[in-house]
Picture 1 (tube, one colour):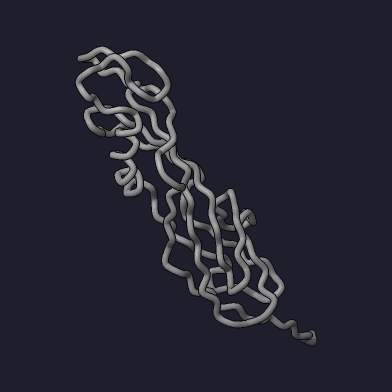
Picture 2 (cartoon, helix red, strand yellow):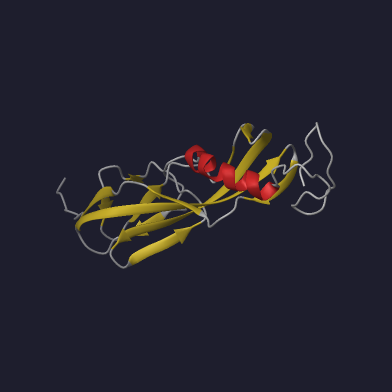
Length: 172
């Protein structure tokens, strides 16, 4: 139950009892706020290191360009003050048949929390989907889960050329 300053209600789980005037319930606030939450979540901005692409048999580092956790500023939903906190996880498809899940967004050197090693040359289309698990508070009460499945956002694919580096002996 969410008590508004102007009316009665008894706190009992996530439903208001005792208020006869059809006030919104937590479930109603969550459903009304879901689309706003989706719009507030950041979009991935994937990148890789080395920036020129991967090298066969060496680790290529990937970064989603998003935070692991984010919290919104308070916003209004159906007359209530709502704050959303969301935790992300990532699913990268580095090449056909090579999809991996990560709980960290990855980053530049020396962060190898989002990495992949290519075994042969070629150009890859690398895709990342972020899955957000969100919860919200209403007028400071909660947290309550944002209704529905995890919120997923897929970034535009990243083109990653993978080349081979060869050593060459040079005389002094």
